Image: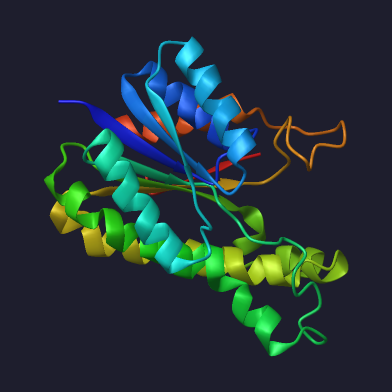
Length: 231
């Protein structure tokens, strides 16, 4: 039976490396993002390597769009075995929580919590039936509860990012506990640095996307490590 991974938040860096790694290991790959041109290029690159892939446009901060996307993936590629969530919102939103309006603060959770949970709920029937099902979640070290990290987020105007990452970090633990009885593995990698080849790379990025993808594969196959940190 074929295995399918949904790569949610597809772009250069981690998600493209994850798509390549899992594709090389025999998975069909569903690439998901808002940018149709980027998705088409990603599918073409994967197919050139012998990987069956398909593109699905979606707004991952909109629950209805997420649910529709999952239904389309299922219809096109069959039952889903793994969902990898690299999607993130505006990292600079609510940079100063003392001046951000309530709508901006509420929107911090659109992708990191609301969209992610819509995806989890939508794929859950598939994951419950799949062998070696998993949720793999990329997060950032801004979410650590640590005085030094908090000071950096305030200094650099990234307070909103700290809030959304921290909420997602907590959600990972709750999902792992809730889903373990169903045999669904949940794993999170916290990124403490910059990924090479992304829009954040100003020439001094310190992490290869392939390094993260290899770690996700290791975590997926061993199924024992809830969290890892890279960087």
